[in-house]
Length: 196
Image (tube, rainbow, N blue to C red):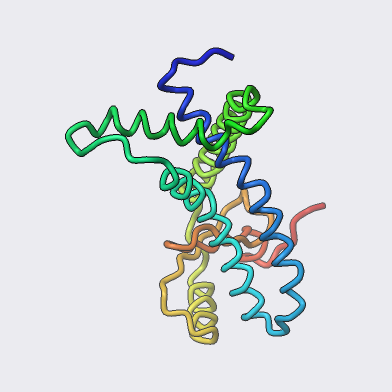
């Protein structure tokens, strides 16, 4: 695949970061698998898992910073854009010059970019669908608001939680975490079981 020179450096550095993330992800998964049995309490196991996920999310940025830091400086602030382009090209060349599959990096980055685009499109579609369901939902009978207030007090929740009823909901579901909404099926609020 023939790419313009200024894009080749970017593709090479992204490809190097992606390939490094493969072994980093496997290593972190092994650390989690080995460390999980050591945490007997649910809360500590949860914190350990979240810490592993946080480290996993930071790995590509750390790899990128390491690869950028290992290159030689190429210019001052006045020539920032050409220096960045030259730096990325130099780092990418340094990072992947020993690899025999350097020709595959543009394909790897292309497939990864298409995958990211597809997952983002799917998430956007699902989010819009949930917004539509919430928009069409109705307010349940008042006694359900009292039940929710009692449950919030019982669990010590201080954040306001909206309670809605939707014919599209088959089971109770929670939507969102910044502005949480509990969506109930109509069969639950009026006491009628849905037909099989």
